[in-house]
Length: 607
Ligand code: F6R
Image (cartoon, rainbow, N blue to C red):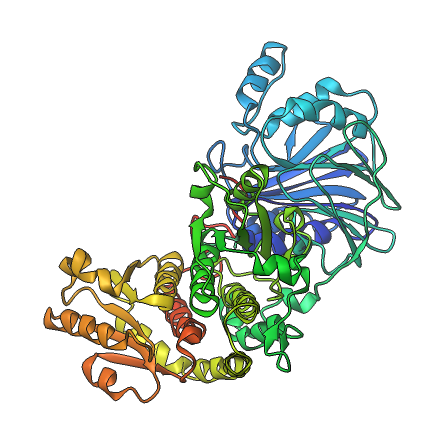
């Protein structure tokens, strides 16, 4: 969703701001803009559409030493230049960029208009600029502090004023904001990616904090103007993390990175001698873990499907009743928190509004909530009672791939820990670890079939509808495969339980509706084969992902992709890879914008 960046320093400001916005493109946007402070006041340049339109409009050598930039994803008001950020007050001396939603903007706007303010946009954000104009007392930090209590909703914002050259003031509530420290230069941004190539250190701001930066320093205060000391962290990303490194798209790069990202997520977390796992950040001792009677995993989209698989691991391996809940649903349910239930919230970005709201509701009602996040220092990671970083590295493509397999890596380790504290023998634990450690090299073998999957995509990408079917631990992998296909290729795809086919979806089967079955070599294989036959009997085309050497399936279906044999419970790790590649190739063949599909944002920070 919207991304923001701010800079105080002496480097070429257009390069810094536009470079930062380029790095934020992956979050999804429909327009962009910058504001810079020059000797003649504030210059604002905004454009609709791709960032290139803005880059073409900005003079390459702007002489300014402070400025802000924004990529907008429209919420209030159509996609237009007037509605793009930065927004200014009536005098044009104040400029604002804002991420989030001001819920009471209409009341504020009505009052401001009644007292003579002239609005130029339909956005909620513009009220902030006019409120600042009204509260202006010559001190930017004090003026920002004065208006924040009037805002209801969420914000990560940066303000600048022509009369206070070289200073930016930021504030956050519910939307991320971080500060970057470079050599004689300071940054503000919604996301480390925007400043990773310049800043050596970062400070993660918390809700309620107000930050003022200049080229040489910063100060952080709270609503009552008390000074706040914050830890200064190293910038954990390399510049390379944000480059395609020879791949045509970030999504393909991230699919191929999964051998390493999964290995990173396992590193130091498997103990073969004790035949168990180790997850340092859980903040729970063995007795507390043994006392857990139920696990509920909460997430959105792909993270929710990873949670479904995690719940399956826990039930199958540790015998603990477990389920996944969609974050947007649980947030508004009458949740009954039982004292021996452990909650997890899963989020790649750590900023998803639905998941954050669910987390806060669960905590308010007394639940112990652990996080499974990728983005270090993200809001969800910081607000949970403990948790695990999945370490998959920055995921830039909007469609999540490597984060999904890293999330289920974490849950497999957690399930192993829980199983070994209960019923699992050391012999079983050891055998599981060996099978699990083989997964990265087995994924490599699956990736080697990329050209066969491309051929499959060529054969099938013209079909407008698909059904993805699975059972047991592969059901959520089927849901995830369907989600991948629909979100990047815009082909309609549904995930269906193979056992549910006869309860309705079978009426859709025809020559025009291909089915994609996930058939691991598990106890449900025969049932899956029966379902495949039901589809074939109705002239449906079937693609199957099955275990290597499963000739019975190969002979029954139209097309097959084989994956190496593994423990049945681990099969989602291998079965999801062909589905990710299939979706990717269909999208490319159909000419879609693979890394930034229409209407989607990487980090969904609004409800
Ligand atoms: C799908 C996708 C989304 C996200 C969902 C949650 O490819 O990317 O469904 O999984 O918006 O995002 P996070 O994991 O950042 O909370």
